[in-house]
Image (cartoon, rainbow, N blue to C red; front, side, top):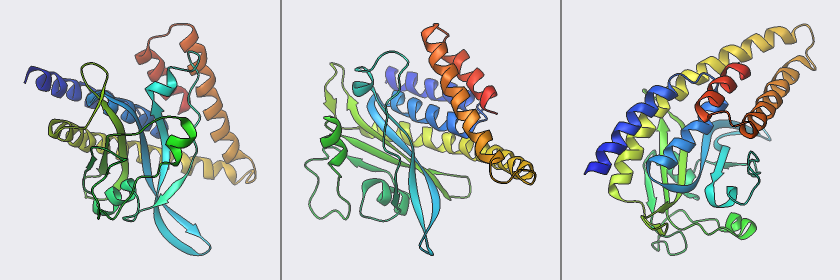
Length: 251
């Protein structure tokens, strides 16, 4: 009971911090990190809903934006980030994330390699095979705005028990992450509005140089933030100060 109270207090504090992050990319990365912390998850990914036009056929997809994995990260030098594949998946019932986005319901899988027969979705083992990492427990939660529209999906992997063992996500974990996701979605909607405004300003600049200006602005912002983040990590800058400066720099 005491740990649950501490978790809820932590979520309230996180909610306040998320609402102060203005850049969408930085917010998505922070949302994933804090979601994993709330339920002691070793890894996870965050997806954003996008409409993709493939050969004239439009459809809603979930595009991966960030992926985190403490076990694999611990094998890298300090300050270096994991490299992951950027891909998207249709919002349908074939995958766990797609099913979560389609139904807008939480999906809790205790063991990815021993799933209940007859489920419409399945677990893709390709990532585990490539990385040497074993996914066991999976908790996938939709990110919905106030109007009930899907913004994206958080998928967190391998809940860790008291002794570091991998355990299924509990009902309490479901309650905590659902509450967190609702508040995170509000912060994401606000950041998306800010991103839309910035993109419109970039479009205005492109009237002068349509081929290069927009891509140049985005490229410089991305490189600047990553260079600063690596420098700040090596120089011991605290994470909260680092994140605040990155947010301002990106904007």
